[in-house]
Image (cartoon, rainbow, N blue to C red; front, side):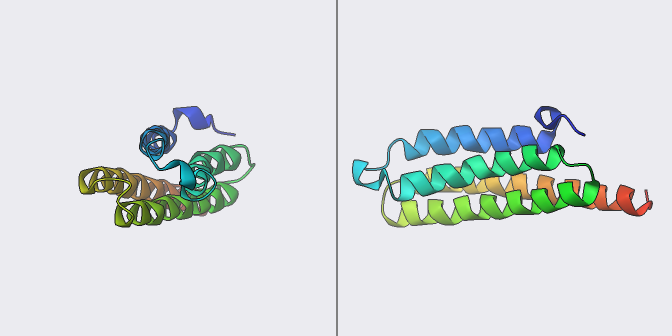
Length: 123
């Protein structure tokens, strides 16, 4: 079992979460049950899946949850693009968030690759 709070991938996910909550707080009230709700659920899912995977008893299960977490990050990215297209966020905010998400996805994939190596005994 891993302490997920010490993982760099968790810390980067938390950075994204804080940024998304700050940005989505500026969305119009009419989006409260639409885009705002969707994007905040997706960003919470990034962290929740890391935590759940950490509590599992095997690297293959952790890898699966990391993969789901990465999928949630791409979901957040798509929702940010929608928010930009609807003029809820600026291009600078969009680019900053996409950069954070790209960094997170690379970290996530590297961690998955590492876990695969140690699981297969090729380290």
